Figure 1 (cartoon, rainbow, N blue to C red):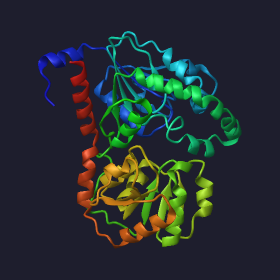
Figure 2 (cartoon, rainbow, N blue to C red):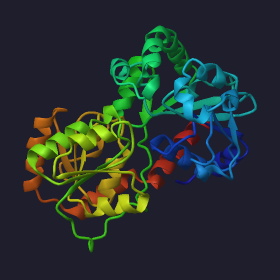
Figure 3 (cartoon, one colour):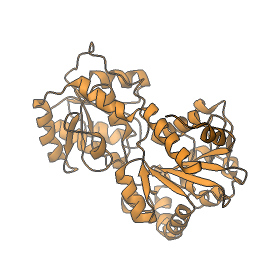
Figure 4 (cartoon, rainbow, N blue to C red):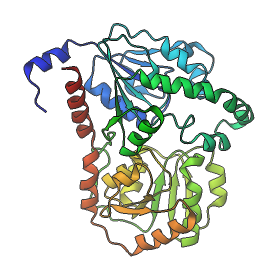
Length: 377
């Protein structure tokens, strides 16, 4: 993108801050923050809690945490602190910045800025456990032995948290959604409009190599948590008698291992090298979750691997008839039927890869720069 000199000069002299919900693990939200940090290299990063060992990519950056960082076990227990996080973010002093860019699915969008400061929020979703998925989260807690306490507290706290979350969204000047699906949620729950900029996918690391032959197995990987619905994939693979390799860690690991039939391997943790190797060799990538966008299936497509996924949410925007199959219903029989269709389909792997390039990090950064520049110049 070409900027006029006056626009470039104005941006160079502006003070910019980045804000993120928390920095304790890898995932799509961190990918977005790292891509933003690569654009705005002098911008400090504000967050609720930060685990330096888990996010070494930011070792050389200025990371400023909230008061929650000083609490015992904060980096491990921060998800149990929904009543504390709103005030923690409101206490952050961002008064010296011209532009604040938050990457948020929770409370980071609630920071308080001066009237003349432009606050742009890249919204991954309106907070799921307050709004769209409240009843699902209530049924399927992920806090282990603390589940009874969380189940008791959640209904008693949720009304005030929803009120705060709605009001926090009104402080944002401009929303960016990570998909049209999320833009609709922002409109429904926050009564705000949003433009759509798809998140960055590492298409340089995830590559298609025509020398690597596709093998007779399907692959999938993610955190093994209830809403990802790996149970559907296991039972569908059992019923269709196809080979399926599942990678990842999470509270569902042991249950999935018990559900797995002779053609299903629940592998647990694998490193990045092995993940890409399996994506490249698999004849298809399976995904049953209703995702806001869904980065991992696009990574599989970047490896030339077609995707079979539940056709609601962000996957309906990233998977086409040339790059995979969308499943109409989120149930075992529907997946079995479409797996049988996948078995009879032939895909052009180079075409699958080319489609994934539309979601590259370079494209994301160009669109962000163009949007931010249009707002502040």
